Length: 491
Image 1 (tube, rainbow, N blue to C red):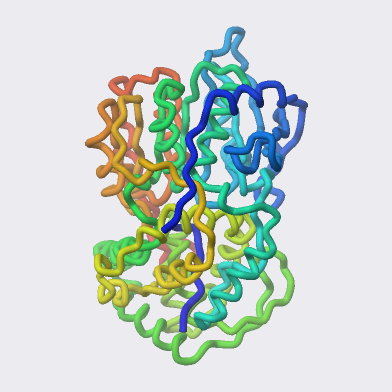
Image 2 (cartoon, rainbow, N blue to C red; image 1 turned 60 degrees about the horizontal axis):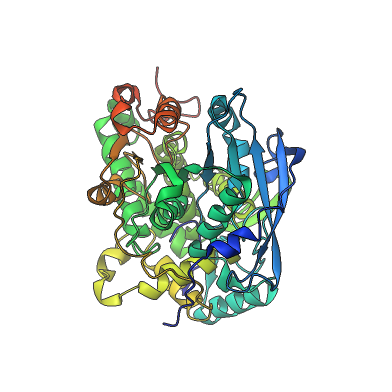
């Protein structure tokens, strides 16, 4: 029996090397017009310039089937804009970069004081030929292996395009073709989470076209997404228990937090709790069987941000000791809704089943350690099952090799990142000759909106000089204190 956690993490392979001819044929196909764009779930309303862009599905066949990609632009306010443009790349895999532009608009608009901001929804995501399928979700139900295979095969049948051409290797060539089409001398690139893989591959393939790079929540090129998710998340959860024990108010209010979590976990594994509640997003009456899967997926996603991490002790206590299961259920439903509306699972699988799962090595996995985590080995096993029938796609030969680059690079990590810990950021540093690694105290996954980080990133992008980055302001960052009741943390 498997808990079906697909999630945002992370052999015959197609291989293709880009040529200048392919790019030259695309230079006249973008016409920008004023637009308003909203983010995931209809949030936000950003005024920008937008264009659609035709690209070959299979880059090796430029005259073959075409797909339509979506590009958003925030024009520079400078009289004489810089020759490079700034771009952002979302994670997932499967997240929309344009949605991230909307979400972080107040931060990203500041970059227009010197240069254009150009954002491409990576093929397979958002508004760019999305590889969507309803058969795969992050609903934490229990599936047999045959059901996982059936859902994967159903997903493949639902896709509008051949998923072999929706990998990182093809995406970076789209990005370079866009740069050439728009006439920018170089790109300054920000990538978060899986987006750091795209950013690193771009700087590997096109070093002369890359002015500077910021990688936030780093996936090292040799790292295979999915294998260590449970271990990394368990380490972060253990740090929550340890920090609560060290924080006087939390320790007094929740003296047996780790034991309460184990007791609650056993209860929900053995006997799910039937609940009816108003859905926290839609407001509709919702019936669920609150099984362990809901608790696990809520914990996993809550650990991504300090604001939601601060609620973990209180919500565990409410369920374990007060038999109040509504906070767990409502929190899990809200996070699952956000996840399922922000990721395209076909694109997720196109990446993971080409760049990660084929490189899994059971002999190198400590399954006893995996089994001891709160997530267990279910994600690893489920990804292997799904990828056993998913067609592997285009993979550049050197993509899994350690990166060596002289491109100025700012490496960002959150101290308590549950999926790409600071050790991952440190792992890429030996190959980067002009790089600085900043670990943001108390932070989780993705540090761009935190404290003084936006200013540091802006100053670095404007200077492309790593020696000019003064990160002393990050000492004032810190995690949120734990909630001890529904009113919040103690005064």
